[in-house]
Image 1 (cartoon, helix red, strand yellow):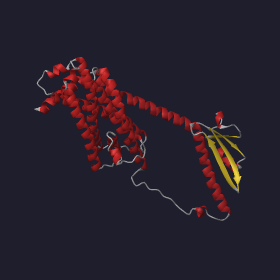
Image 2: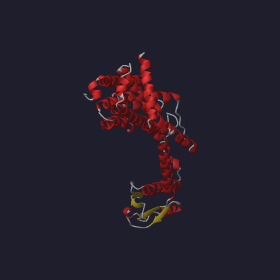
Image 3: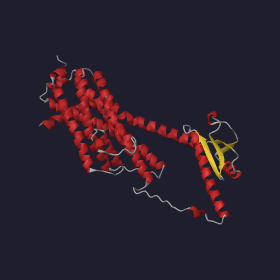
Image 4: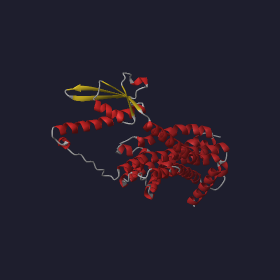
Length: 384
């Protein structure tokens, strides 16, 4: 039976790949690298943030602000008030506060450098003190006039989050941006590396002749290779994500308010959406490998195609991008956008079938081209 032979070729290729240290390294290296890199990044971020929180901000004031405000600034444990005319470029002052009295109103101006975090922190601290000072001053003036502070509150505004907990929603949005991106990115990279070895690599090692000597159709051979390549791509993408789960668990333990849920339905949906893309990329990478004469040549050709495949993956990183018919018609990008929506708990059967139809159609065309190339002796044996 054809499926039985394809399965035999598939198993043979998978065994060969997992005997290859390079293939194993491609799949498993991120498992070792990600935790180290992310732990370093998180640790570095925590240290920097802690240093910023503890650092005393030096702020300069001029034009003689009211003594009440000066006292409030001096009472702030993270502010050091100086009377200086030095500008922000001197690196001695983090922020600059000036006041101008116009028609009995105190107009304050905060000058700071938004590109410097210490200056940004100083400005935020000044805004906090000024806001508190404004409330106290308004209350005092109204009390002197025999009025309640609430007298000037004509409108009360209350905001309610309709989609559940706001923090959980933000976390889901962030996961929806990065997880599909990483799955697709490393899945495509995995197929790129393996496809070159399954096609040009075997041509260079002259092992295709041995395969052709057995009573197996070339279509069955190429389909077995394709399944192996797709399988490695999916494994590569999922392993990269699974390697992050210990860090996510550590984050939920360290910050109890964080609620991260990854359901079986979500994982199943991600796999369903990634399979057509892996088939698509594998067919084109294998096809290029068949045209190339050597493994290095296949890698060179494939690197150009790899860049083209990676361009749509960055679409998911664009904030507030709406899903339109144009987006749904772009291969790879369409799957990523639906995967992003899935992390927010939003599934659309119509969009899902439409995206699967487009990606599977392109994959089918790729399989036809790849099969014709593999049937060509001129392509396989280089015109010999």
